[in-house]
Amino acid sequence: MNESNTQFEKRKRDHIRIALDPRSQADGQNGLDSIELIHEALPNLDFKEVDISTSFVFSGVSGNQSLPLSSPIFISSMTAGHENGREINERLARLSDRRQILMGVGSQRRELNDSNAAEEWLQVRKLAPRAKLLGNIGIAQLIKTPIDSIRRLVDATEAVALFVHLNPLQEVLQPEGTPSFKNSLIAIENLVKQAKVPVVIKEVGCGFSTDTLKRLEGTGIAAVDVAGKGGTHWGRVEGYRSEENEMLYQVAQTYANWGISTVQSMLNAEEAKVSYEVWASGGVRNGLEVAKLCALGAKKVGIAKPFLEAALQGDEALEALLNKLELELKIALFCTGSQNLSELATKRVIR
Image (tube, rainbow, N blue to C red; front, side):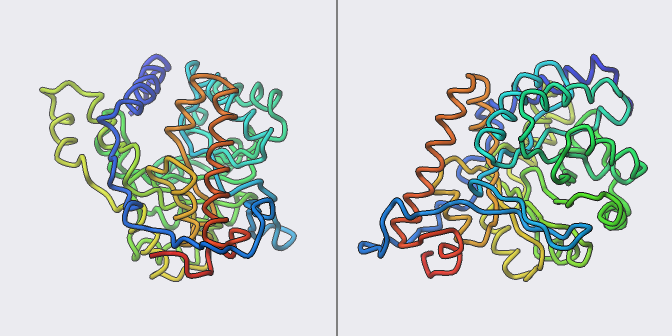
C-alpha cells in the first residue's frame, strides 16, 4: 500500500506517542530478572582500571576491520523520515558524535519513494559529522528494492553499517503494512554481497529462535540484534493505532504478549553457536541489565525508550542518561571482578 506524505507523518507521530504509552511496554517479560550476577567481595583491581570500551569487528573489502567504540551501549533504531523525528535524531546523533557510541536510525522506507526525505541526514551530518550511524530498512522493502536504491540509503546517512529489521507481527497488524517475507534469506545474502557496509539483522521486539539464528549462519552478515520481547511491543503499538471496535485492535490484544524474551533469545544464540556477533536489545533500562546481557554473550546492547524520553528533554538529559548507564555498567564489572567486557563474558559471573 502506498502512503501519502500526510499519512506517513501521522503514522510516525502515532508511533512515537504510542511507544511512550505504558500499555505498549511488555514490562517484566525480557527475562533479565532471572539473571543474577555473582558479587565479588574482593576484586583484584581498582575501579579506575575498569574499561568498558569495545569495537565493532567486521569483514570489509580489505579484510577484517575494527570500529572503536566507547562502550557496548548503542541507541536502538526509533524514528526517521518525518518532521517530528528530525529534532530527536539530531539530538541522538550529537550524542553519538560526542561519545562515540553506535546509533541506529529509524526506518528509511520513505526515502525509497521520496528523495526529499534524505535531506534530514544532510542536516544531521552537519551537526554530528563523527556520529556512528547505522542505516535501516525493513526486510519487506529489501526484497522488492534494487540494491542500488539500498546503497543510496547508506550513502544518505554515511552509515557505518546497515540494519535490516524483521517485523512480521508488526507488518501484519499495521494497516499500511507489507507482510510479504518470501525469499527473505536470498535477499539478505544478495545485500551482503553488494552493500559495501556490514549488514546487521534485527528484530523489533519479538526475538529469535535457535532455528532462525542458524538459518542466518553463512549469509555473511556481521551481526544479529536479537531484540527480544520485554520492551516496546510493536504488535501492541500497531493495535493501539486502531479504534477499539476495529478488527486489528482486537487481534492485537490476542498477540499482546507474543514473542521470545530477550534472555531466551540470547540463550538460543548460545545454542545455535553462530559465528557472527550477537547483539541484544529489548526492554533494557539500566547499566546492570546491559552487564547481564554482556555476560550472556552480547557484544553490543541497544536501548530505545529511555533514549527517546531523554531526547525529548534535550542534550543535557541525554548526556546524563548515558553517564548513568555507563557508570552502572562499570560498577557491575567492578563488583564481579571483571576489568573489561571480555572478562565479564568469559568469567563465571552468572547465577
